[in-house]
Length: 282
Ligand code: PAF
Image 1 (tube, rainbow, N blue to C red):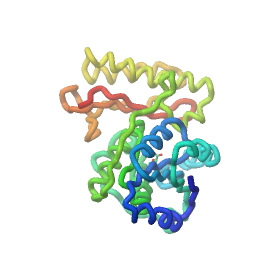
Image 2 (cartoon, rainbow, N blue to C red; image 1 turned 30 degrees about the vertical axis):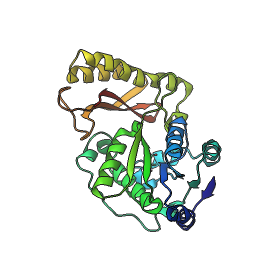
Image 3 (cartoon, rainbow, N blue to C red; image 1 turned 45 degrees about the horizontal axis):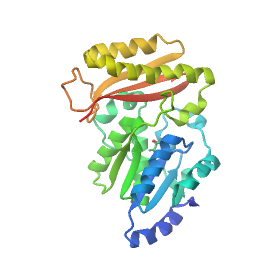
Image 4 (cartoon, protein in one colour; image 1 turned 90 degrees about the horizontal axis):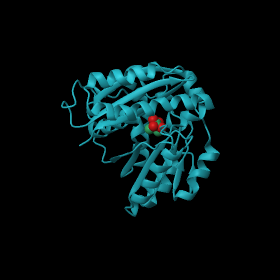
């Protein structure tokens, strides 16, 4: 496994694989790796001849300066976790390497970015598309792997890839949860032991809402989840939406779409956590 920091090194390392027509798989991350990331990496290694993992905390996707400053940076530990997995290249560029000049590109992501994360974190998905498109242009992977915990991000990336005609297969991988149900996230590291206990209410409410939804409508299910979260001291609900899994627009009935998902964002001890649950799958 080779650690590289510049686009030049990346280009020369990949040129051999490209000329041998090897399949290149790519896992973009912001580091602070946890088993959720490692599941993406393992799948990438299984399905491709060359695996590139990117570790870069992308400033343009943070709409909150404190969030950017507090984002965990754990390169040494990340490399230790990646070593046994069969990764070929770890690309860990500086901000200047990715953005030698400010990126002023604006991506048309409508209507996917007007709701949920897009609404509460203005500019976030534009920043994600800026960095992911730059990385796609430099790595030119055959496949790229993203987690379904960031369900809206996955939909946004798929839209960008289709609108910009990238020839890259976007592979969505299931949420990885702790044994007690908490969705794995780099942000969990910032929860105190007490807040971590409280945060469990999020996934447990979503699981229960799936059973509730079997005999109740969308509005009742929304109400069920909102009341459960709001009644838990220590949690502040930012949003809960039940949406079409493709357009991400809110639905009013279970018949309205073939894929339906509930997405939630909650603050716990000052840490913003997101999670989601599938109510209906094709
Ligand atoms: O999901 C993330 O960690 C980031 O949004 C991504 C895709 C690596 C872009 O910075």
